[in-house]
Image (cartoon, rainbow, N blue to C red; front, side, top):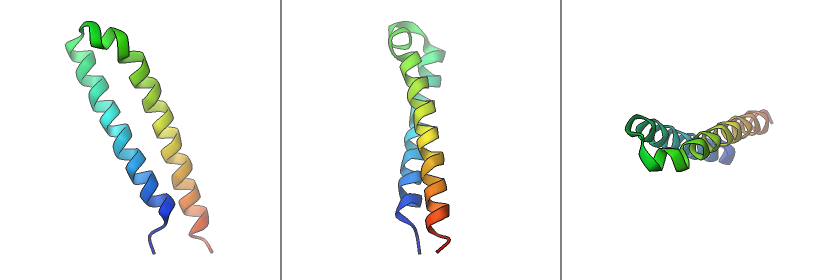
Length: 65
C-alpha cells in the first residue's frame, strides 16, 4: 500500500525540481530577476530537499508496521 508520506515526498521532490530548473534558467539569463530571486530560489531548494528527506524517512518508518 502506498503511504501518504511517500506521495507527499514525491510532490515535494517535483516542487524542488521546479525550483532548481527555475534557478538554473534565471542564473543562465542573469538580469534583475536573478539578482532579486536567485538566493531565495536556492534557499527554497534546500528547504524542499530537506522536507523531502524527512517525508521519505517518515514513509519508511511508518511502512515498517
